[in-house]
Amino acid sequence: MQLIDGKAIAAEIKAEIAAEVKHIISGGGKQPHLAAVLVGHDGGSETYVRNKVIACEQCGFKSTLICFEADVTEAELLACVDRLNKDEDVDGFIVQLPLPKHIDEQKVIEAIDYRKDVDGFHPINVGRMAIGLPCFISATPLGILTLLKRYAIETSGKKCVVLGRSNIVGKPMAQLMMQKQFGDATVTVCHSHSPSLKEECQAADIIIAAIGSPDFVTENMVKEGAVVIDVGTTRIEDHTKKSGFRLNGDVKFDEVSPKSSFITPVPGGVGPMTICSLMKNTLAASKKEYYE
Ligand code: GUN
Image 1 (cartoon, rainbow, N blue to C red):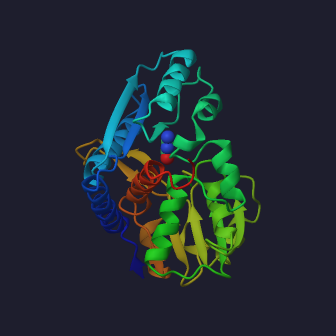
Image 2: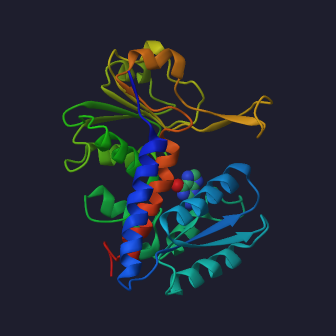
C-alpha cells in the first residue's frame, strides 16, 4: 500500500506556481488576483475560505475576501458578483457554497462571468468540460486527476467507480475519468439509489468516494490492489482535538488501506489538492489561458 500524500504534492505545486508568478512579475506582468465571497459563519466554509486566502499568499497572488452576514439579500449578493465581474484587477473569484436557503445558488453561479469562474461551476465551463474543450475544471476533480498523474497511476482502460453524483465532485469526476485525454477509464457512477453499489465497488480498479457518508466504504467492498480516493470530509465532534472536531472520510481507512495499492488519507489527501487546483485555475485566468 502506498499513501498518496496530497499535502506534499499540493506544496510542490504551490511552489511551482509561486516561481512562475515571481517570473511573471519580474517581467512586468500582472500579479494574479483571486477574490472570495463568504456568506454567513458556517465553520467549514470559514475554514475553507481562510485556507484559500493563505494559499494565495503562498503562491504570490493578491487576494480579496468579501464577507456578508447570512441575512444578505440575493440582490445584494448579485450586485457584488456584478462588481467583481467588472473589476479589471480581479482575474477570478469564487462564491463559497453552500449559500443560505433564501438565496438561489444556481442564479448566483450563473451570474458569474464564466471567464472569471475559477471554480468551474458555471454551465459554460461545465459544458465545455463535458465535451473536452479548454475551460476551468472544478477544483476537486482537477486535484484528483493531478494526484493520479503525479503518482503515475494508470487509469486508461481501468474500471472506475465514482460514488456520489454532486455537481461539484461526482458528476465532473465521472466525466473526466471517462474522457480520453484524462482518465480514459470505464466509469460507473453509484449513488444512494444504486442497488448494486457494493458489487460495482468490488469489481473496481479505482474507487473515488464522494458521498459525504463517514466510513461508508468498508474492506469487503474493495478489491485487492484497488486505488482508493477519499473525497469525504465530514466533521465529527471530537473533544480530544483543539478544534472540537475531526474530519472523517468516506472510507474506513484502517480496514481498506491494507487491501489497496494506493489510498488517500483524510485529512491530507484530496483536501489540500482542491485548494491548489483553485490556485492553478486562478493563474490560468490571469494568463487568459482559456478565454480572452
Ligand atoms: N463548497 C465546497 N466546495 C466548494 C468549492 O470547491 N468551491 C466553492 N465555491 N464552494 C465550495
